[in-house]
Amino acid sequence: MSKERSRRTWLEIKKSGVWGSADSVLKVESLLKLSFDRLPSPSLKKCFAYCAMFPKDYCFETEELKQLWMAEGFLGSPMAMVDIGDKYLNGLLSNSLFQDVEKDKFGNILTFKMHDSVHDLSLSVSKFDTLFFQENSSLTSKECSHIRHLNVGCDGESLPEILTAVAPKLYSLFSEIDVFKKLSKSFTRLRVLKFVGAANICELPDSLGELKHLRYLDISWTSIEALPKSTTKLYNLQTLRLLGLLRLTFPDELEKLISLKHLYFNRKELQPVNIGNLTWLQTLPIFIVGSERGCSIKELGSLNELCGELEIHHLEGVRDKQEASGANLHRKE
Image (cartoon, rainbow, N blue to C red):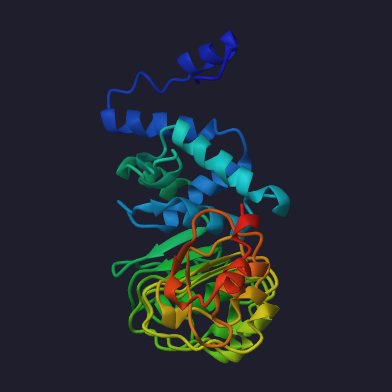
């Protein structure tokens, strides 16, 4: 209510009936629901509800969450997605729906959490389209017909039936087990595929390339060692996360990923050669100079959309001033 100047609106809140409950738990729930109901736009409400995909006490990373919102289409115009994402994040913070904020020295928000009661609210407002499948889940496929966002925390007796029912309708799939391989051709609407530290996942099927709507792919901390050749058909892919892998073989012609804006990796073995061909990249946290072809500092020369933070490792591999100048660092914002 801090920006609300209307006396009438303040009186409506005063008379809303949430203050008189004798049950303190019910009172808190009612007040939180009131905060949610008064969020200024349906898109902002969707962004909040999407947080139900994560477990309680999860430490959200700002960029990760904004990229997921972007992949789901919650942020509207592609030209203004970054600004809208920041606006929505600050809106949820100002409504006290996020807490435990950590910032960098420039005041940029890095991470934050949700209070358990707020997380319960996110589950409540998203229960018609979001399912967090756990070991004790006893839902039937009929009860899951409206699910669009699924997080699979473990295997279960009813899981195969539920997956078969919801796969063609799913927009988001988070999973700690390999539920994707057998049904990969059924996930025709999938926009987000995130394997949550699933070390038991060793490969991706070649049918991955048939996910025409996929915009976000996270295979971090899995045992995957190669991206299938069909990966280059993911023309709408915006974010690719490869953190914590031991090694990774990339297909040729990675430059066909014409929408790729955010690429994350943390080892030399995970850096694709000829990265300079990915000219639309905005996020590249690390670049490792190598002596191999396609790994020189010059690869940075054409990446003029880069923003945020960039670490350059193995600078001793830069041979001379001319090669260093080829990186065009002075043109980066």
